[in-house]
Image 1 (cartoon, rainbow, N blue to C red):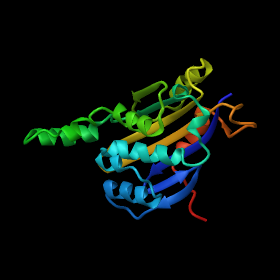
Image 2: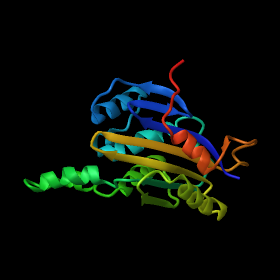
Image 3: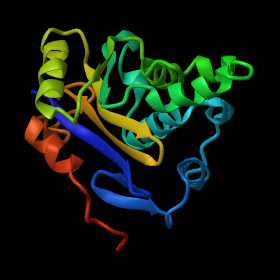
Length: 212
């Protein structure tokens, strides 16, 4: 049986890990907010500054998701999968690239005009070499994500998987990532919440937790 062993949500200028708010900032432009999150948690990854906003949001959410309690060394790289989705693909970056075409096309922006580049950034950072997939849907489809991840894990194609939703368009953004693992090695006991679409939907809904 698969379990959700960690979750991370970033929306409305608040960061939630495992359903508790761990950072929040008064409303600011998205680039400034993402940079504030990066500095607040003391991350050191110079390539972060070169990423587009979609990749920055996904990278930060994954970084926080895996920050506590996950050890990639417990797995073979090929056992680590990523399954993500959103509504707008890389449209936010596509618009920015199109604006440069009127003058001098920007290769630095062009490389981010595919949404699965975000998955690539996460895989490079954490050495995930298993299956990865990116899907486009109008809204977060937890039932589809659950089904896809279960096929991977029940078929022994993955032992751990990051799944969820990362979407950016203008100043509208939401990220919700879940770490799915199976009991047994490296877990001597049940490690978390049973994996289900209902649980992902509950966590995905607007949070009310705040700093105590």
